[in-house]
Amino acid sequence: MSLSEIAVPTFVRLLGRLSGFLDKAAAHAEAKKIDPAVLLETRLFPDMFPLVRQVQLASDFAKGTTARLAGLEPPKYADEEKTFDELKARLTRTLKFIKSLDQAVIGAAADKDITFPAGGGTQRTLKGTDYLVLSGLPNFYFHVTTAYNILRHCGVELGKRDFLGVPASS
Amino acid sequence: MSLSEIAVPTFVRLLGRLSGFLDKAAAHAEAKKIDPAVLLETRLFPDMFPLVRQVQLASDFAKGTTARLAGLEPPKYADEEKTFDELKARLTRTLKFIKSLDQAVIGAAADKDITFPAGGGTQRTLKGTDYLVLSGLPNFYFHVTTAYNILRHCGVELGKRDFLGVPASS
Image (tube, each protein chain N blue to C red):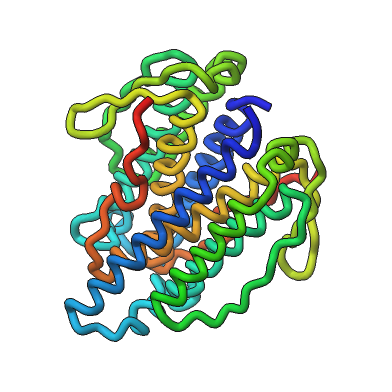
């Protein structure tokens, strides 16, 4: 097995699930006559990021992790989304980018040194597997789950199935 | 690389982080004179699970996923925890169980059929890699992150570093 079998299906699948959360959130806002901007700016606590930033960060960790494993500099996206449609377009763009990467290069990255930003202007270098396990996946899941929790807290009718999807049986 | 390089470090690491959240939660309850049971029963929305259940489920997915990948029936733990200390003891027990498993068997499980409960009394069978990527990891991360979010929502001073830890530089 290779890193691409773990990384790519996770990011592709969960970015799709996240886009589905946004569909339900937009429908909820319309049905309850809530300004969508209120949901996009909701936080679970004052010093946490609002929904819009959680989605941007999920996108950033998905494209950042896969780009670096593929040996490329991650593309920068302007953080300017103001609507559910704009956020969904960013997720579509992120998915398209990930699918454009050379899966064989990602698959061969387990023992390659990957250098990535580690906060406060510092950089860190880890082997590809460690980078994925210690940084890429936990950060990505953190922001996708927090987006889900913000929407649940706002009363949007999401369930575990929206998060997991229905895995194909083998 | 093998499945054990992805699965085991993730569960071991995040169970330790989760135990750290509970330490901060217990200290917060003491400092603010909050009954710990109030935090343990807090939910982000009335039809979501409370903190105590999120921690039990994180334990269940950690031991369930690793046991099945190791070819064993997961041990059943009674869901009777009523205090932070009891929850921490469950996490310690879960960690001890995971570390007792044969890592080589987990490492060879990528293409093995794994049968697991899929809700409503049904069962599902997936290859080891798919089981880990589509069920084990997302479920586990979901419950650990939701426990974090409940505590953040209650004002417990946790930060991203409590969730990620400090990965060893290579």
